[in-house]
Length: 261
Image 1: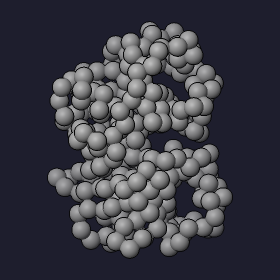
Image 2 (image 1 turned 30 degrees about the vertical axis):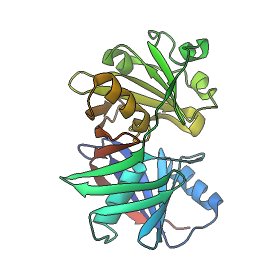
Image 3 (image 1 turned 90 degrees about the vertical axis):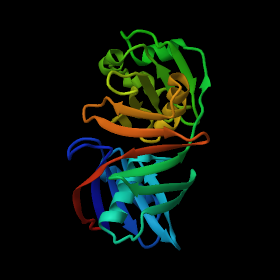
Image 4 (image 1 turned 45 degrees about the horizontal axis):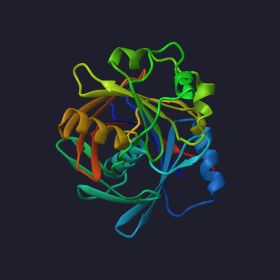
């Protein structure tokens, strides 16, 4: 089985979010897919199978299969374009989240994902326990998969130290997005998901399906520049398309090899 490791939403190697990508001819048992993802110990391992003129894609954290992953989809498109001989400038994936399109143009890969318009919720005592010692969020929302907390400055986002045990108790969510307006970019974010096997995700493309509609509305602009403030840093260009969002970035190959399974 082939395997690639790709840094997605990066500016250079060793930044962005590393994802493993495994091309498959057919689907093996789910237990094997999960075991490989656990062994890889990356935020996501993506697998794909050719399905006519499309590709069926699935994503696994070290502990669970997830419904949607942006950076591993970007990494998979990069592998198809750069290593697996895919011709053309558009790739269509089918997934548990429906049809996902990736276009290659202007030196970037552009993901087209369904937008997630989050619902306002009360800032609860449980939420305050997620980031002890931090200022209280000014707003809270629940999206399709995640909670989103809005803070009043980029400095607060950069300084957050999560109580991972408390965050992990939010089992009704995949993870927690923390966000604020940015200095030099439109908005910044971080993403924590110990309940999904990821303490802090370096760059979370799928979280931007929630972030982009929120910030597009708040800033009254459809094109946005974003940065994820993890230790590795992630860089994204985003566009609000109404019911869908475009999330764009760069990917670079770190490694290719073979799995002996």
